[in-house]
Length: 118
Image (cartoon, rainbow, N blue to C red; front, top):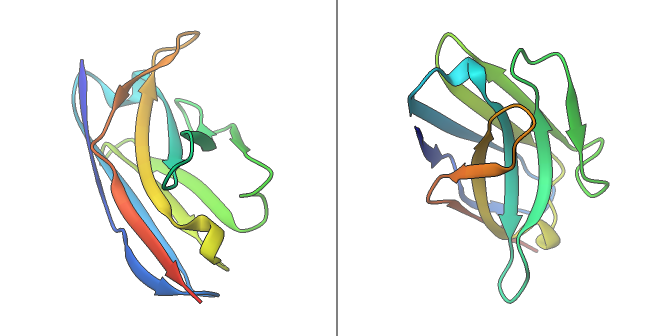
């Protein structure tokens, strides 16, 4: 198993930036594809971005393309989400998740709140 702890959320004005971090412990971090998801108030959880085990492949939701960047440091067992040009629609709890290759995202952190004010 792997345990995930997110950090870096907070309150930011529209147009601002935040960098989320997700620290992993437990079984080998580099064995997992990593993803970021978010859930706004009254909304379903949605995919934001993901990165392959070695970091060579990334994908993004349309809402994140051009503004967010996912990266990972396997030596530090950490995955990041750099978020730029934030707007109020980005307000949500952001979750880090891990998936075994070919498997579903089945390990989740507790989430970190991001609030974007207008």
